[in-house]
Image (cartoon, rainbow, N blue to C red; front, side, top):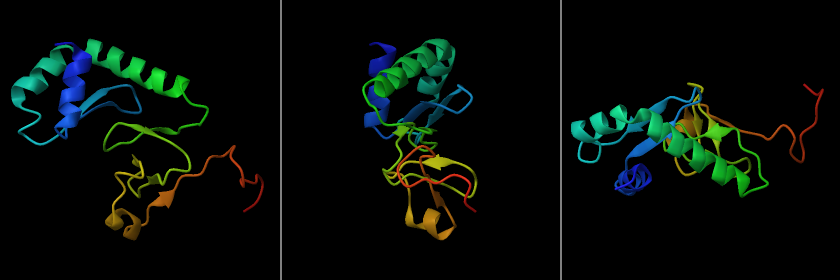
Length: 124
């Protein structure tokens, strides 16, 4: 099985395999999906996992004209402006699918494309 297929299978089971803002490979998920053996195998092949994730991200970005502030800190998918994403009080970037009511109640802030329609510079 290829690394890409393993990543996809983990995601289907609710696991998260992603690159953080610094390009470090991160793994998240419950113990039934992210077993110690799977974690160890992915850690041993972190360079290959990083390469697959970077290629995946590049392919996603190449197939769209929309801009993105980066990946969701919860699921690892690309966050798009105008799709309900918000920045949490902790600073984490969360896509619209992962945003929870308690995040909004805690004071999350919608992300805005600084080059998008309706954005005006110089106004306070």
